[in-house]
Image 1 (cartoon, rainbow, N blue to C red):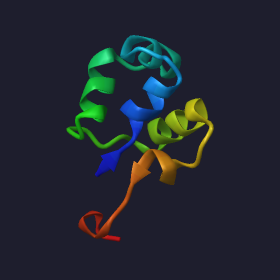
Image 2: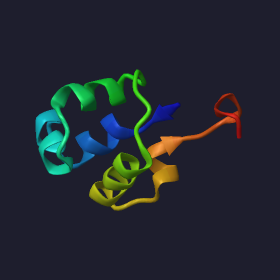
Image 3: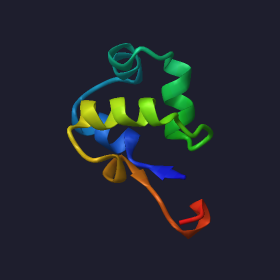
Image 4: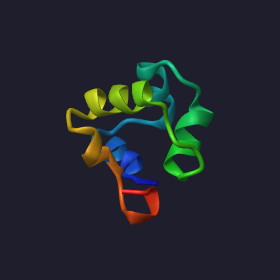
Length: 68
């Protein structure tokens, strides 16, 4: 699943470490998310959408390959 985490984080001038601290995960989790190596739980996806003040669908890009 593709996502816009890196783009949204950079637009807010946040480092990976800062974002990780805000949502209580490791920097490694943010790195893995940004590289598309990790699909977050619903709770983590919701936390990210709240930090970026946008719907989950604007953070995570769902497509046919995701079974939708």
